[in-house]
Length: 434
Ligand code: ZN
Image (cartoon, rainbow, N blue to C red; front, side, top):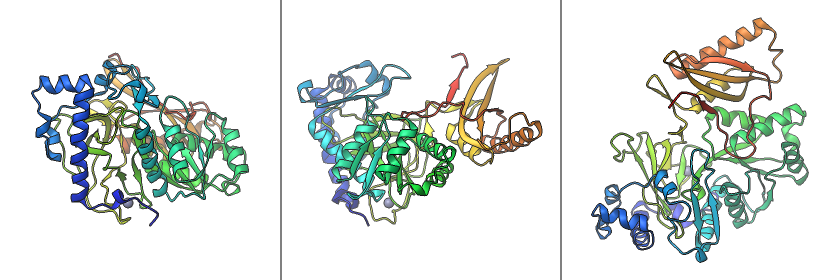
């Protein structure tokens, strides 16, 4: 097994002891230094001294994204600004951004956790790690940068370059590991195809992709297009950034860094914790962060805790790959769909490119879903009616099977749907009146 630190293989009892101690320290710090927590706990008559086990956590209130927005910009910081050495923020595309502060210690812990993510994908000091995430207010680029430096890899911050320049760097510098969004990896793969660059002309061996939920079909597509092994990882800026959970070489679920985060999965209607195996909303409590501690933060991401031990030897629990965000979930006639299900259906059909957009609208009181997909660059021509009709019926059948209701299908010319530029891509356009 690749190098792991002691926490990754700790016995459950010892790990829970660490979690409870860190939880108690976090609760004290939060109540002492964050008015939001102090006032809320007081109002609810919660005595934090009574939180003595992980089960007691379920009696504490949740923290929501709205709570964080209401405290914009610094209301949730647990240390004075002079002790903050870094600030990141969420994009704010769906409302006010959330501003997150890190102490020097937070930055150091973060690097340790991202180093675990990279090591689990068998990245070492011999690797040349190209980071295509943007280095900006969002946490992904710098988070991976520090983690890769921590393990001694050679880091190439290629963020913000055009895809052509990314590939040039990749080839000439002999990049072995690529870090970015899965949609950007697909973008690079299609660029290689267009430029007739065989993936074996590159030294790429492994890719670590995150910041978007992506399907197994997309993983296969990326691996085929780039000749690499592709790993999923998970994190969000509110909690820290990348480094919350990660795939090991088994690639069967993501190990949660439980010595720093306590994971619960809750039922969205009863708000009670669910047992392993049952799907619900992920809720995290940070237990080592100094600058921006969060207690029972509702992430809006949907997944489940997995049962059983992982053959890799890590004892950290695993969560299933995130099937989607509650915000991205489309509810049509009472049926819940995630864009990843649509993606999976599209990738099953030869002749359609993995670039798509979903438009939801209301016509005559009924919800209408249109899936707009690009035809593959090698597809004959959108004017060839018979071929288009055959392709349409194949895609329609694949979507019908995946969704359980009828979505409309529309084809668009290659290269017309927005590509990832290193940031998260928004694939669903909901035009329905609120
Ligand atoms: Zn494992």
